[in-house]
Amino acid sequence: MNIVTEMSETPDRSAAKAALATLRAWAETATPAEIAALDPAMARMLAPADYPALSRAYPEDFTAGDNYRASLPDLQNGPSSLIRGAQQLIQHVGISNFRLPIRYRSREGGDMRLETSVTGSVSLDAEKKGINMSRIMRSFYRHAEATFSFEVIEAALDDYKTDLESLDARIQMRFSFPMKIASLRSGLTGYQYYDIALELVEQDGERKKIVHLDYVYSSTCPCSLELSEHARETRGQLATPHSQRSVARISVETQDEGDCLWFEDLIEICRRAVPTETQVMVKREDEQAFAELNAANPIFVEDAARLFCEQLLADGRVGDFRIVASHQESLHSHDAISVLTQGETFAAQSIDPKLFNTLFHVG
Image: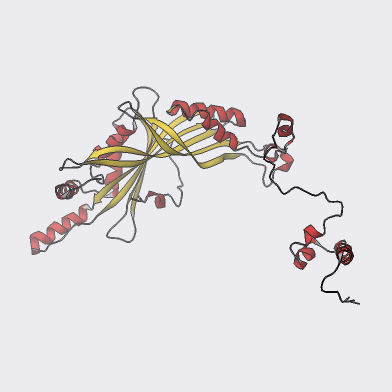
């Protein structure tokens, strides 16, 4: 039987206390879902009467001493009994897009500080719960003020492999590298920015140093060029071949022996292979020159892959490599793509299904 007691508009303290006692008596047999359905704030109201009063003010003067830090719970380094899911080795676990300014050296000997996005990961043994990811960041900060090179990346990798007690590890740093480029005929110059990534991979005790470069160029279709010339010659019909902005992602394993492969060197290798790089500063004579340059170098996507390959094979500083090219068609509503690999480092039967989506160059 339900009993409804008429309450006054302003109940006093004793009435409120009695009502709370009634709620607590009901909560002893109610489920958490029933309590939440009654009122989401009810769980706090139904806390035991002796529940401690907690401070809601931020303690600005509190200092975490050694003993206090030692008492803090650390679930990531907990026992294997805390592992959820299959107790299996994880090949890579870490952080992505951790950003900080890093100094780089140019081929001419100068230094520049560039915003860099860091991805750092280590392998995780099957019996370990997890890693403290902040240690990866701390390892990087210990070396961030030095002039950056693969040697400093190795020092950072050594640090967090030791800190995290891991066998395999990987560091990748992405940045935009500026290089001043002259126009074709007018004498103007402007900065071209190249998306570059440095990668250091250690697996089974072997380290590999890899440089990734996105090279952006114009590709004029050889077939379309011939058809356009055919229309001019046979029918006096004005026609233009189609060309499009294209991107090649060049990934090379660098050799430790011999001369350094500078960023500028890899860019020039690409430019020798496919000279129709997109332009920075142009006047009318430069635009005309670019049209002539494209007509002198028409390429299918297969041609582009082989031309890049030819130049990379000729450079003794380059080990294994991969070329991924995408011609983002102005004729078709789809793109033309090619992938060419040399050596075991980049050989793979499967590729990321979103790989070619990442090749679009945003100006």
